[in-house]
Image: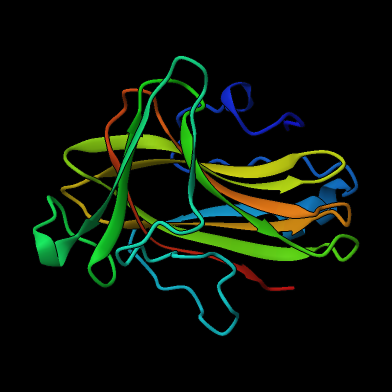
Amino acid sequence: MRSSIPGLKALVLPAAMAVGLCGLATAGPAQAEATHRATHQAVPLRSDASSPNLLTAGSFEQSTAGWQKLIPTGGIVNWANYNTAAGAPAPAYDGTGYLAFNTNIGGGSVFQDVAVPVGTGGTYEASVFLSSQSGPATGTFCLWSLGSSNTDLCSAYSVNSSTGYENYVLVFGVPQSTGTLRFQVYPTANGGTTDMDTASLTRIG
C-alpha cells in the first residue's frame, strides 16, 4: 500500500514476476480480493475491445500524444517512438509502432493521466504488452487512483527480447474520490530497455 505521489519514493516493490498490491482503504479484505488483481500472461492475449480505450496513442503508431515522462531530480528517462516500417531495432506487438524507454534512476517512468468522473468509482482494467529492446528488461507496471488520497495496484514485470511480448493486466476497483487514473510503467534503473505496445485502459464495471 502506498499513499504518496507516484514518483521516486512511490516505488518499493520486490522483483517478482507478478505481484498485486492494493491500497484501497475503503474496501474490506473480501471486496479487495474480488475487485483488485494483477495477472501476467506468458502467452500474449488480446484484450476484449468491447469497451473504449481511455488512453491516447496506446498503440504508439508514430505518436506519443498524451504520454509523459516522470524524471526524478538528477535522473534521466530516455524514450523513442519506433516505427518498424522505417527500420526499428525490434518488432512491434501490433501495427508498426512501439515505445522503447529506460532510466538510470529509481522512480523514472512513463505515464499517462486520464480524467474520470469524481463520485462514480468503478472497476477499470489496464492492459499492456511489454518486451525488451535487447536481452532482459525488468520494471513495474502500475495503475494509480489519484484523488483525495493516492492508491495503486502494481505488477512487477520481467521480459526478454528472445521470448517477445508478454501481456500484463491490472483490474482495479477505484474509490469514488478518484478524479484521475494514472497508467504508469517504471523500468528498473539500469535494468534494460523496455518496449511497450498496445496499452489500454477500459472501464469494465
